[in-house]
Image 1 (tube, rainbow, N blue to C red):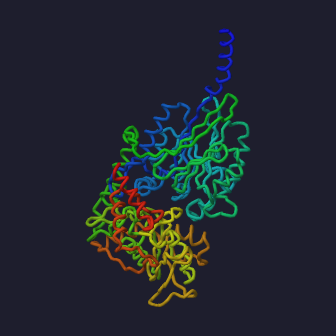
Image 2 (cartoon, rainbow, N blue to C red; image 1 turned 180 degrees about the vertical axis):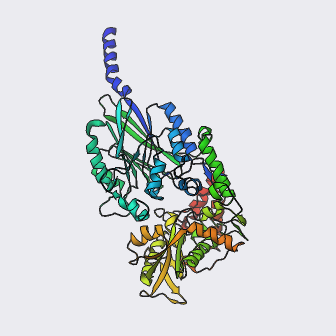
Image 3 (cartoon, rainbow, N blue to C red; image 1 turned 90 degrees about the vertical axis):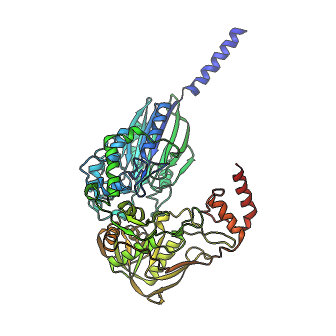
Length: 592
Protein backbone atom coordinates (compact mmCIF):
# COMPACT_ATOMS: atom_id res chain seq x y z
CA UNK A 1 0.00 0.00 0.00
CA UNK A 2 2.84 2.33 0.92
CA UNK A 3 4.67 1.39 -2.27
CA UNK A 4 1.57 2.21 -4.37
CA UNK A 5 1.15 5.53 -2.58
CA UNK A 6 4.81 6.31 -3.19
CA UNK A 7 4.45 5.54 -6.90
CA UNK A 8 1.41 7.82 -7.13
CA UNK A 9 3.27 10.59 -5.28
CA UNK A 10 6.27 10.30 -7.59
CA UNK A 11 3.99 10.41 -10.62
CA UNK A 12 2.32 13.57 -9.32
CA UNK A 13 5.72 15.17 -8.72
CA UNK A 14 6.78 14.27 -12.23
CA UNK A 15 3.66 15.89 -13.62
CA UNK A 16 4.26 19.02 -11.56
CA UNK A 17 7.95 19.37 -12.40
CA UNK A 18 7.39 21.29 -15.67
CA UNK A 19 5.48 23.91 -13.71
CA UNK A 20 8.39 24.43 -11.37
CA UNK A 21 10.95 24.15 -14.14
CA UNK A 22 9.61 27.06 -16.20
CA UNK A 23 12.40 29.50 -17.00
CA UNK A 24 11.87 33.01 -15.69
CA UNK A 25 13.10 35.84 -17.94
CA UNK A 26 12.80 39.49 -16.92
CA UNK A 27 12.97 42.34 -19.42
CA UNK A 28 13.48 45.83 -18.00
CA UNK A 29 12.57 48.71 -20.30
CA UNK A 30 13.35 52.38 -19.91
CA UNK A 31 12.65 55.27 -22.27
CA UNK A 32 12.59 59.05 -22.56
CA UNK A 33 15.48 59.43 -20.11
CA UNK A 34 16.10 62.86 -21.65
CA UNK A 35 19.64 63.20 -20.39
CA UNK A 36 18.80 62.88 -16.70
CA UNK A 37 21.67 60.82 -15.30
CA UNK A 38 22.11 62.25 -11.82
CA UNK A 39 18.54 62.86 -10.70
CA UNK A 40 18.96 66.62 -10.56
CA UNK A 41 17.02 69.69 -11.65
CA UNK A 42 19.59 72.08 -13.11
CA UNK A 43 16.90 74.74 -13.44
CA UNK A 44 16.59 75.20 -9.69
CA UNK A 45 19.77 73.50 -8.49
CA UNK A 46 18.03 70.77 -6.50
CA UNK A 47 18.25 67.01 -6.20
CA UNK A 48 15.13 65.26 -7.42
CA UNK A 49 13.34 62.56 -5.45
CA UNK A 50 11.91 60.28 -8.08
CA UNK A 51 13.94 60.12 -11.29
CA UNK A 52 17.33 59.83 -12.96
CA UNK A 53 19.45 57.02 -14.36
CA UNK A 54 21.30 56.63 -11.06
CA UNK A 55 18.04 55.53 -9.41
CA UNK A 56 17.27 53.24 -12.31
CA UNK A 57 20.61 51.51 -11.91
CA UNK A 58 19.92 50.82 -8.23
CA UNK A 59 16.68 49.13 -9.21
CA UNK A 60 18.21 47.26 -12.17
CA UNK A 61 20.94 45.81 -9.99
CA UNK A 62 18.38 44.61 -7.45
CA UNK A 63 16.43 42.83 -10.19
CA UNK A 64 19.59 41.24 -11.58
CA UNK A 65 20.31 39.83 -8.14
CA UNK A 66 16.76 38.50 -7.97
CA UNK A 67 16.84 37.05 -11.50
CA UNK A 68 20.12 36.63 -13.41
CA UNK A 69 18.06 36.11 -16.59
CA UNK A 70 17.42 39.84 -16.96
CA UNK A 71 17.60 41.95 -20.12
CA UNK A 72 17.88 45.77 -20.08
CA UNK A 73 16.64 47.77 -23.08
CA UNK A 74 15.64 51.37 -23.85
CA UNK A 75 13.11 52.93 -26.25
CA UNK A 76 14.82 56.22 -27.06
CA UNK A 77 14.87 59.98 -26.43
CA UNK A 78 17.93 59.76 -24.22
CA UNK A 79 20.60 62.20 -25.44
CA UNK A 80 18.39 65.32 -25.29
CA UNK A 81 16.53 67.16 -22.58
CA UNK A 82 18.83 68.71 -19.97
CA UNK A 83 21.25 71.61 -19.91
CA UNK A 84 24.04 69.03 -19.65
CA UNK A 85 23.06 67.39 -22.94
CA UNK A 86 21.59 70.26 -24.96
CA UNK A 87 23.95 73.07 -24.08
CA UNK A 88 27.24 71.29 -23.44
CA UNK A 89 27.82 67.73 -24.64
CA UNK A 90 25.62 67.64 -27.74
CA UNK A 91 27.61 70.60 -29.04
CA UNK A 92 30.83 68.55 -28.83
CA UNK A 93 29.72 65.18 -30.29
CA UNK A 94 33.27 64.01 -30.94
CA UNK A 95 33.87 63.88 -27.18
CA UNK A 96 32.67 61.12 -24.85
CA UNK A 97 28.98 61.58 -24.07
CA UNK A 98 27.99 61.04 -20.42
CA UNK A 99 24.57 59.54 -21.18
CA UNK A 100 25.93 56.84 -23.49
CA UNK A 101 28.86 56.32 -21.11
CA UNK A 102 26.44 55.68 -18.24
CA UNK A 103 24.24 53.41 -20.37
CA UNK A 104 27.29 51.34 -21.29
CA UNK A 105 28.20 50.97 -17.63
CA UNK A 106 24.62 50.04 -16.72
CA UNK A 107 24.73 47.17 -19.18
CA UNK A 108 22.07 48.16 -21.68
CA UNK A 109 21.70 45.54 -24.40
CA UNK A 110 19.73 47.56 -26.96
CA UNK A 111 18.36 51.05 -27.54
CA UNK A 112 15.73 52.19 -30.02
CA UNK A 113 16.11 55.56 -31.71
CA UNK A 114 13.79 58.27 -30.40
CA UNK A 115 12.69 61.34 -32.33
CA UNK A 116 14.78 63.64 -30.12
CA UNK A 117 17.94 61.81 -31.14
CA UNK A 118 17.53 63.69 -34.45
CA UNK A 119 17.39 67.20 -32.96
CA UNK A 120 20.97 68.05 -33.94
CA UNK A 121 20.98 66.31 -37.33
CA UNK A 122 22.20 62.89 -38.34
CA UNK A 123 25.95 63.53 -38.06
CA UNK A 124 25.74 64.55 -34.41
CA UNK A 125 23.41 61.67 -33.57
CA UNK A 126 25.67 59.17 -35.33
CA UNK A 127 28.80 60.38 -33.53
CA UNK A 128 27.16 60.24 -30.11
CA UNK A 129 25.35 56.94 -30.60
CA UNK A 130 28.43 55.29 -32.11
CA UNK A 131 29.88 55.36 -28.59
CA UNK A 132 27.31 52.76 -27.46
CA UNK A 133 28.45 49.22 -26.66
CA UNK A 134 24.98 48.01 -27.64
CA UNK A 135 23.05 48.11 -30.93
CA UNK A 136 20.92 51.15 -31.81
CA UNK A 137 17.71 49.85 -33.38
CA UNK A 138 15.57 51.50 -36.05
CA UNK A 139 13.87 49.00 -38.34
CA UNK A 140 11.87 51.71 -40.13
CA UNK A 141 14.61 54.29 -40.83
CA UNK A 142 16.57 53.80 -44.04
CA UNK A 143 19.20 55.62 -46.04
CA UNK A 144 18.65 56.65 -49.64
CA UNK A 145 20.18 53.37 -50.84
CA UNK A 146 17.72 51.34 -48.77
CA UNK A 147 20.20 50.34 -46.07
CA UNK A 148 19.29 50.66 -42.42
CA UNK A 149 20.27 54.04 -41.01
CA UNK A 150 21.64 52.56 -37.78
CA UNK A 151 22.59 49.19 -39.22
CA UNK A 152 20.15 47.31 -36.98
CA UNK A 153 16.45 46.55 -37.33
CA UNK A 154 16.65 44.14 -34.42
CA UNK A 155 19.04 42.27 -32.19
CA UNK A 156 18.77 38.75 -30.79
CA UNK A 157 19.83 38.30 -27.19
CA UNK A 158 20.45 34.76 -25.88
CA UNK A 159 19.35 34.27 -22.30
CA UNK A 160 18.83 31.06 -20.29
CA UNK A 161 18.95 28.95 -23.43
CA UNK A 162 16.35 31.01 -25.32
CA UNK A 163 16.71 33.67 -28.00
CA UNK A 164 14.96 36.99 -27.36
CA UNK A 165 14.54 39.23 -30.41
CA UNK A 166 14.32 42.98 -29.76
CA UNK A 167 12.89 44.93 -32.72
CA UNK A 168 13.13 48.73 -32.56
CA UNK A 169 11.01 51.30 -34.42
CA UNK A 170 10.75 55.08 -34.04
CA UNK A 171 7.76 57.23 -34.87
CA UNK A 172 7.91 58.01 -38.60
CA UNK A 173 6.84 61.58 -37.80
CA UNK A 174 10.44 62.72 -37.26
CA UNK A 175 10.51 64.81 -40.48
CA UNK A 176 7.49 66.77 -39.22
CA UNK A 177 9.61 68.12 -36.37
CA UNK A 178 13.16 67.97 -37.67
CA UNK A 179 12.82 68.02 -41.43
CA UNK A 180 15.45 70.26 -42.98
CA UNK A 181 18.06 69.50 -40.37
CA UNK A 182 21.33 68.00 -41.54
CA UNK A 183 20.82 64.59 -43.14
CA UNK A 184 17.23 63.98 -42.10
CA UNK A 185 15.57 64.76 -45.43
CA UNK A 186 17.75 62.06 -47.00
CA UNK A 187 16.25 59.36 -44.80
CA UNK A 188 13.09 57.34 -45.37
CA UNK A 189 10.81 56.76 -42.38
CA UNK A 190 8.59 53.75 -43.04
CA UNK A 191 5.34 52.78 -41.37
CA UNK A 192 6.24 51.11 -38.08
CA UNK A 193 3.75 48.27 -38.44
CA UNK A 194 5.18 47.32 -41.83
CA UNK A 195 8.79 47.50 -40.65
CA UNK A 196 8.00 45.26 -37.68
CA UNK A 197 6.25 42.71 -39.90
CA UNK A 198 9.28 42.61 -42.19
CA UNK A 199 11.66 42.21 -39.25
CA UNK A 200 9.62 39.33 -37.79
CA UNK A 201 9.67 37.60 -41.17
CA UNK A 202 13.44 38.01 -41.38
CA UNK A 203 13.93 36.67 -37.86
CA UNK A 204 11.86 33.60 -38.64
CA UNK A 205 12.61 30.72 -36.27
CA UNK A 206 15.79 32.32 -34.94
CA UNK A 207 13.99 33.72 -31.88
CA UNK A 208 11.79 32.17 -29.20
CA UNK A 209 10.46 35.50 -27.90
CA UNK A 210 9.52 38.62 -29.89
CA UNK A 211 9.87 42.00 -28.18
CA UNK A 212 9.05 45.28 -29.94
CA UNK A 213 10.51 48.47 -28.51
CA UNK A 214 8.53 51.29 -30.13
CA UNK A 215 9.25 54.95 -29.69
CA UNK A 216 5.62 55.99 -30.14
CA UNK A 217 2.39 55.96 -28.21
CA UNK A 218 -0.33 53.37 -28.47
CA UNK A 219 -2.43 55.50 -30.79
CA UNK A 220 -1.62 57.52 -33.89
CA UNK A 221 -0.23 60.98 -33.33
CA UNK A 222 -0.73 62.23 -36.90
CA UNK A 223 -1.56 59.32 -39.20
CA UNK A 224 -4.98 58.40 -37.85
CA UNK A 225 -6.07 56.88 -41.17
CA UNK A 226 -3.21 54.40 -41.62
CA UNK A 227 -1.67 54.13 -38.14
CA UNK A 228 1.91 54.30 -39.36
CA UNK A 229 2.86 55.98 -36.05
CA UNK A 230 0.68 53.79 -33.81
CA UNK A 231 1.91 51.02 -31.53
CA UNK A 232 -1.60 49.63 -31.50
CA UNK A 233 -1.40 49.21 -35.26
CA UNK A 234 1.92 47.38 -34.83
CA UNK A 235 0.23 44.91 -32.50
CA UNK A 236 -2.93 44.60 -34.60
CA UNK A 237 -0.84 43.60 -37.62
CA UNK A 238 1.62 41.45 -35.66
CA UNK A 239 -0.28 39.61 -32.91
CA UNK A 240 2.63 37.20 -32.41
CA UNK A 241 4.48 39.91 -30.48
CA UNK A 242 5.08 38.75 -26.90
CA UNK A 243 6.18 42.06 -25.35
CA UNK A 244 5.41 45.58 -26.58
CA UNK A 245 7.28 48.52 -25.09
CA UNK A 246 5.86 51.97 -25.92
CA UNK A 247 7.36 55.41 -25.29
CA UNK A 248 7.33 59.02 -26.53
CA UNK A 249 4.17 60.26 -24.77
CA UNK A 250 5.63 60.30 -21.23
CA UNK A 251 2.65 58.46 -19.77
CA UNK A 252 2.31 55.19 -17.90
CA UNK A 253 0.98 52.31 -20.02
CA UNK A 254 0.28 49.01 -18.29
CA UNK A 255 -2.00 46.55 -20.03
CA UNK A 256 -2.32 43.17 -21.64
CA UNK A 257 -3.96 42.43 -24.98
CA UNK A 258 -4.41 38.74 -25.55
CA UNK A 259 -1.09 37.22 -24.52
CA UNK A 260 0.94 40.39 -25.25
CA UNK A 261 2.12 42.45 -22.28
CA UNK A 262 2.40 46.20 -22.98
CA UNK A 263 4.28 48.76 -20.91
CA UNK A 264 5.36 52.39 -21.14
CA UNK A 265 7.05 54.83 -18.79
CA UNK A 266 7.04 58.51 -17.98
CA UNK A 267 10.04 60.70 -18.74
CA UNK A 268 13.40 61.44 -17.11
CA UNK A 269 13.73 58.07 -15.44
CA UNK A 270 10.52 58.27 -13.41
CA UNK A 271 9.70 54.60 -14.05
CA UNK A 272 10.99 51.28 -15.28
CA UNK A 273 8.74 48.92 -17.25
CA UNK A 274 9.24 45.39 -15.91
CA UNK A 275 8.12 42.44 -18.04
CA UNK A 276 8.29 38.96 -16.51
CA UNK A 277 8.00 35.94 -18.80
CA UNK A 278 7.77 32.26 -17.85
CA UNK A 279 8.80 29.72 -20.51
CA UNK A 280 8.49 25.95 -20.52
CA UNK A 281 11.00 23.45 -21.88
CA UNK A 282 9.45 23.60 -25.33
CA UNK A 283 9.83 27.37 -25.58
CA UNK A 284 6.19 28.18 -24.90
CA UNK A 285 5.39 31.22 -22.77
CA UNK A 286 3.22 29.89 -19.96
CA UNK A 287 2.75 33.22 -18.21
CA UNK A 288 3.63 36.90 -18.55
CA UNK A 289 3.14 40.03 -16.48
CA UNK A 290 3.96 43.73 -16.78
CA UNK A 291 4.58 46.19 -13.97
CA UNK A 292 5.52 49.88 -14.15
CA UNK A 293 7.88 50.49 -11.24
CA UNK A 294 7.96 54.04 -9.87
CA UNK A 295 11.46 55.22 -8.91
CA UNK A 296 10.15 57.37 -6.05
CA UNK A 297 12.00 56.40 -2.90
CA UNK A 298 14.77 54.51 -4.72
CA UNK A 299 18.23 55.58 -3.57
CA UNK A 300 20.43 56.86 -6.43
CA UNK A 301 23.41 54.68 -7.22
CA UNK A 302 26.64 56.25 -6.01
CA UNK A 303 28.38 53.80 -8.33
CA UNK A 304 26.90 55.67 -11.31
CA UNK A 305 27.37 59.11 -9.81
CA UNK A 306 31.02 58.45 -9.05
CA UNK A 307 31.90 57.49 -12.62
CA UNK A 308 34.55 59.96 -13.79
CA UNK A 309 32.66 61.26 -16.82
CA UNK A 310 29.31 61.41 -15.02
CA UNK A 311 30.79 63.28 -12.07
CA UNK A 312 32.66 65.66 -14.37
CA UNK A 313 29.51 66.28 -16.43
CA UNK A 314 27.50 67.06 -13.31
CA UNK A 315 30.07 69.51 -11.98
CA UNK A 316 30.55 71.11 -15.38
CA UNK A 317 26.81 71.61 -15.85
CA UNK A 318 26.25 73.10 -12.40
CA UNK A 319 29.15 75.48 -13.07
CA UNK A 320 27.66 76.31 -16.48
CA UNK A 321 24.29 77.13 -14.90
CA UNK A 322 25.58 79.10 -11.94
CA UNK A 323 27.99 80.99 -14.13
CA UNK A 324 25.34 81.96 -16.61
CA UNK A 325 26.34 79.61 -19.39
CA UNK A 326 29.97 80.42 -20.04
CA UNK A 327 32.11 78.93 -22.79
CA UNK A 328 32.33 75.14 -22.46
CA UNK A 329 30.61 75.31 -19.09
CA UNK A 330 33.36 77.33 -17.46
CA UNK A 331 30.92 79.93 -16.23
CA UNK A 332 30.90 83.73 -16.20
CA UNK A 333 28.76 86.58 -14.90
CA UNK A 334 25.04 86.24 -14.19
CA UNK A 335 22.88 86.78 -17.25
CA UNK A 336 20.92 89.63 -15.72
CA UNK A 337 18.37 90.31 -13.03
CA UNK A 338 14.71 90.88 -12.24
CA UNK A 339 12.89 93.13 -9.82
CA UNK A 340 10.32 90.50 -8.74
CA UNK A 341 9.05 86.97 -9.38
CA UNK A 342 7.17 86.38 -12.63
CA UNK A 343 4.56 83.81 -11.57
CA UNK A 344 1.70 84.39 -9.10
CA UNK A 345 1.14 81.99 -6.22
CA UNK A 346 -1.34 79.22 -7.03
CA UNK A 347 -4.69 79.70 -5.32
CA UNK A 348 -5.21 75.94 -5.37
CA UNK A 349 -2.37 73.48 -4.92
CA UNK A 350 -1.61 71.77 -8.22
CA UNK A 351 -3.71 74.14 -10.37
CA UNK A 352 -1.16 76.36 -12.13
CA UNK A 353 -2.13 80.02 -12.24
CA UNK A 354 0.10 80.29 -15.30
CA UNK A 355 -2.45 78.29 -17.29
CA UNK A 356 -5.65 79.92 -16.05
CA UNK A 357 -4.67 83.56 -16.49
CA UNK A 358 -2.18 85.80 -18.22
CA UNK A 359 1.16 85.98 -16.41
CA UNK A 360 4.46 87.83 -16.70
CA UNK A 361 6.34 84.68 -17.77
CA UNK A 362 4.25 84.23 -20.90
CA UNK A 363 4.08 87.93 -21.67
CA UNK A 364 7.87 88.13 -21.53
CA UNK A 365 8.35 85.21 -23.96
CA UNK A 366 5.72 86.54 -26.34
CA UNK A 367 7.11 90.08 -26.20
CA UNK A 368 10.58 88.80 -27.12
CA UNK A 369 9.14 86.75 -29.98
CA UNK A 370 7.23 89.78 -31.28
CA UNK A 371 10.26 92.07 -31.01
CA UNK A 372 12.62 89.67 -32.78
CA UNK A 373 10.24 88.50 -35.52
CA UNK A 374 8.38 91.72 -36.21
CA UNK A 375 5.15 89.73 -36.33
CA UNK A 376 1.69 91.02 -35.42
CA UNK A 377 0.79 88.14 -33.08
CA UNK A 378 2.89 85.69 -31.06
CA UNK A 379 2.05 82.27 -29.61
CA UNK A 380 3.99 80.41 -26.91
CA UNK A 381 3.45 77.72 -24.29
CA UNK A 382 4.26 77.41 -20.60
CA UNK A 383 6.26 74.20 -20.97
CA UNK A 384 6.23 73.44 -17.25
CA UNK A 385 3.47 74.45 -14.83
CA UNK A 386 5.96 75.64 -12.21
CA UNK A 387 8.23 77.62 -14.57
CA UNK A 388 9.13 80.97 -13.02
CA UNK A 389 11.83 83.60 -12.82
CA UNK A 390 12.97 84.50 -9.30
CA UNK A 391 13.61 87.97 -7.96
CA UNK A 392 17.26 88.98 -8.25
CA UNK A 393 20.06 87.57 -10.37
CA UNK A 394 19.18 85.28 -13.27
CA UNK A 395 21.36 82.39 -14.40
CA UNK A 396 21.13 80.04 -17.35
CA UNK A 397 19.14 77.49 -15.36
CA UNK A 398 16.40 80.07 -14.83
CA UNK A 399 16.19 80.69 -18.57
CA UNK A 400 16.10 76.94 -19.25
CA UNK A 401 13.30 76.64 -16.69
CA UNK A 402 10.97 78.90 -18.65
CA UNK A 403 12.09 77.68 -22.09
CA UNK A 404 13.55 74.18 -22.06
CA UNK A 405 13.58 73.43 -25.80
CA UNK A 406 16.03 74.52 -28.50
CA UNK A 407 13.22 75.79 -30.73
CA UNK A 408 13.79 78.37 -33.42
CA UNK A 409 11.23 81.05 -34.29
CA UNK A 410 9.18 81.27 -37.50
CA UNK A 411 7.06 84.07 -38.93
CA UNK A 412 4.12 83.06 -41.10
CA UNK A 413 1.17 84.91 -42.63
CA UNK A 414 -2.24 83.68 -41.47
CA UNK A 415 -5.85 84.71 -41.94
CA UNK A 416 -8.12 85.70 -39.10
CA UNK A 417 -10.03 82.45 -39.53
CA UNK A 418 -6.81 80.43 -39.35
CA UNK A 419 -5.61 82.20 -36.22
CA UNK A 420 -8.94 81.60 -34.50
CA UNK A 421 -8.83 77.92 -35.50
CA UNK A 422 -5.35 77.68 -33.96
CA UNK A 423 -6.61 79.34 -30.80
CA UNK A 424 -9.53 76.91 -30.62
CA UNK A 425 -7.12 73.99 -31.00
CA UNK A 426 -5.08 75.33 -28.10
CA UNK A 427 -8.13 75.90 -25.88
CA UNK A 428 -9.04 72.22 -26.14
CA UNK A 429 -6.68 71.60 -23.23
CA UNK A 430 -9.38 72.69 -20.79
CA UNK A 431 -12.28 70.64 -19.53
CA UNK A 432 -15.70 72.19 -20.00
CA UNK A 433 -16.88 74.00 -16.87
CA UNK A 434 -19.94 72.59 -15.10
CA UNK A 435 -22.10 74.69 -12.74
CA UNK A 436 -20.87 74.14 -9.19
CA UNK A 437 -17.25 73.48 -10.18
CA UNK A 438 -14.87 75.23 -7.77
CA UNK A 439 -11.92 75.27 -10.17
CA UNK A 440 -10.82 75.18 -13.77
CA UNK A 441 -9.42 71.78 -14.76
CA UNK A 442 -7.50 70.31 -17.66
CA UNK A 443 -8.04 67.43 -20.06
CA UNK A 444 -5.30 64.91 -19.13
CA UNK A 445 -5.07 63.82 -22.78
CA UNK A 446 -3.56 67.22 -23.64
CA UNK A 447 0.00 67.67 -22.31
CA UNK A 448 0.65 71.14 -20.90
CA UNK A 449 3.17 71.94 -23.63
CA UNK A 450 0.36 71.85 -26.21
CA UNK A 451 -1.40 74.88 -24.70
CA UNK A 452 -0.35 78.13 -26.35
CA UNK A 453 -1.15 81.63 -25.13
CA UNK A 454 -1.32 84.50 -27.57
CA UNK A 455 -0.11 88.11 -27.54
CA UNK A 456 -0.99 90.82 -30.05
CA UNK A 457 -4.72 90.06 -29.91
CA UNK A 458 -7.23 90.38 -27.09
CA UNK A 459 -9.52 87.38 -26.60
CA UNK A 460 -11.69 85.37 -24.24
CA UNK A 461 -11.94 81.62 -23.65
CA UNK A 462 -15.51 80.64 -22.76
CA UNK A 463 -15.24 77.36 -20.84
CA UNK A 464 -18.99 76.96 -20.61
CA UNK A 465 -18.78 75.93 -24.27
CA UNK A 466 -17.57 72.62 -25.75
CA UNK A 467 -14.25 72.25 -27.50
CA UNK A 468 -14.14 74.08 -30.81
CA UNK A 469 -16.55 76.82 -29.71
CA UNK A 470 -14.63 78.60 -26.97
CA UNK A 471 -12.69 81.49 -28.50
CA UNK A 472 -14.75 84.68 -28.25
CA UNK A 473 -14.36 88.42 -28.86
CA UNK A 474 -11.02 88.31 -30.65
CA UNK A 475 -9.77 91.88 -31.12
CA UNK A 476 -6.84 93.00 -33.29
CA UNK A 477 -5.66 96.61 -33.31
CA UNK A 478 -8.78 97.62 -31.42
CA UNK A 479 -11.20 96.04 -33.90
CA UNK A 480 -12.88 92.63 -34.12
CA UNK A 481 -10.67 90.18 -36.02
CA UNK A 482 -12.47 89.25 -39.22
CA UNK A 483 -12.02 85.86 -40.87
CA UNK A 484 -10.57 87.40 -44.03
CA UNK A 485 -8.08 89.66 -42.25
CA UNK A 486 -4.42 88.81 -42.78
CA UNK A 487 -1.70 89.14 -40.17
CA UNK A 488 1.69 87.67 -39.35
CA UNK A 489 2.24 85.12 -36.59
CA UNK A 490 5.39 84.33 -34.61
CA UNK A 491 5.48 80.66 -33.61
CA UNK A 492 8.20 78.14 -32.81
CA UNK A 493 9.31 75.59 -35.39
CA UNK A 494 7.87 72.64 -33.44
CA UNK A 495 4.38 74.10 -33.20
CA UNK A 496 4.45 75.19 -36.83
CA UNK A 497 5.20 71.66 -38.01
CA UNK A 498 3.38 69.47 -35.51
CA UNK A 499 0.20 71.52 -35.16
CA UNK A 500 -0.30 74.31 -37.67
CA UNK A 501 0.73 72.17 -40.63
CA UNK A 502 0.09 68.64 -39.41
CA UNK A 503 -3.41 69.57 -38.20
CA UNK A 504 -4.14 71.60 -41.33
CA UNK A 505 -4.76 74.78 -39.34
CA UNK A 506 -2.99 77.15 -41.74
CA UNK A 507 -2.19 77.21 -45.45
CA UNK A 508 0.71 79.69 -45.51
CA UNK A 509 4.41 78.82 -45.34
CA UNK A 510 7.06 80.29 -43.11
CA UNK A 511 8.49 83.48 -44.56
CA UNK A 512 11.26 83.95 -41.98
CA UNK A 513 13.21 81.78 -39.53
CA UNK A 514 15.48 82.94 -36.73
CA UNK A 515 19.16 82.10 -36.86
CA UNK A 516 19.30 81.40 -33.13
CA UNK A 517 17.06 79.65 -30.61
CA UNK A 518 14.26 81.31 -28.69
CA UNK A 519 16.15 80.49 -25.50
CA UNK A 520 19.13 82.45 -26.82
CA UNK A 521 16.79 85.36 -27.55
CA UNK A 522 15.69 85.37 -23.91
CA UNK A 523 19.34 85.35 -22.79
CA UNK A 524 20.05 88.33 -25.06
CA UNK A 525 17.01 90.19 -23.73
CA UNK A 526 18.23 89.93 -20.16
CA UNK A 527 21.72 91.02 -21.17
CA UNK A 528 20.30 94.18 -22.76
CA UNK A 529 17.39 95.05 -20.44
CA UNK A 530 18.25 94.04 -16.87
CA UNK A 531 16.89 94.58 -14.37
CA UNK A 532 13.70 93.30 -15.97
CA UNK A 533 10.41 94.16 -14.27
CA UNK A 534 7.56 91.67 -14.70
CA UNK A 535 4.59 93.00 -16.66
CA UNK A 536 1.18 91.53 -17.49
CA UNK A 537 -0.92 92.79 -20.40
CA UNK A 538 -4.07 90.89 -19.37
CA UNK A 539 -4.98 90.56 -23.03
CA UNK A 540 -6.88 87.30 -22.45
CA UNK A 541 -9.16 85.83 -19.83
CA UNK A 542 -11.31 82.82 -19.12
CA UNK A 543 -15.07 83.44 -19.13
CA UNK A 544 -18.19 81.33 -18.80
CA UNK A 545 -17.28 80.14 -15.30
CA UNK A 546 -18.61 81.07 -11.86
CA UNK A 547 -16.14 79.82 -9.29
CA UNK A 548 -18.33 80.93 -6.34
CA UNK A 549 -15.38 82.61 -4.68
CA UNK A 550 -17.57 84.00 -1.91
CA UNK A 551 -19.04 80.60 -1.03
CA UNK A 552 -17.51 79.39 2.28
CA UNK A 553 -17.84 75.79 1.10
CA UNK A 554 -15.42 76.50 -1.75
CA UNK A 555 -12.93 78.06 0.64
CA UNK A 556 -13.18 75.03 2.92
CA UNK A 557 -12.58 72.56 0.09
CA UNK A 558 -9.59 74.59 -1.13
CA UNK A 559 -8.11 74.61 2.36
CA UNK A 560 -8.31 70.80 2.43
CA UNK A 561 -6.57 70.63 -0.96
CA UNK A 562 -3.84 73.05 0.05
CA UNK A 563 -3.27 71.23 3.34
CA UNK A 564 -2.87 67.92 1.51
CA UNK A 565 -6.07 66.24 2.65
CA UNK A 566 -7.60 66.21 -0.83
CA UNK A 567 -5.81 65.55 -4.11
CA UNK A 568 -5.48 68.50 -6.48
CA UNK A 569 -8.46 68.49 -8.90
CA UNK A 570 -6.27 68.87 -11.99
CA UNK A 571 -7.97 66.48 -14.41
CA UNK A 572 -11.50 66.96 -13.06
CA UNK A 573 -12.98 69.82 -11.08
CA UNK A 574 -14.37 69.42 -7.59
CA UNK A 575 -18.03 70.40 -7.53
CA UNK A 576 -20.04 71.95 -4.70
CA UNK A 577 -22.75 69.32 -5.26
CA UNK A 578 -20.22 66.84 -3.82
CA UNK A 579 -19.40 69.05 -0.83
CA UNK A 580 -20.44 66.57 1.89
CA UNK A 581 -18.54 63.69 0.30
CA UNK A 582 -15.42 65.84 -0.18
CA UNK A 583 -15.48 66.96 3.45
CA UNK A 584 -15.95 63.38 4.62
CA UNK A 585 -12.97 62.24 2.52
CA UNK A 586 -10.79 65.09 3.77
CA UNK A 587 -11.62 64.39 7.42
CA UNK A 588 -10.95 60.69 6.95
CA UNK A 589 -7.52 61.57 5.52
CA UNK A 590 -6.89 63.91 8.44
CA UNK A 591 -7.59 61.10 10.86
CA UNK A 592 -5.04 58.76 9.30
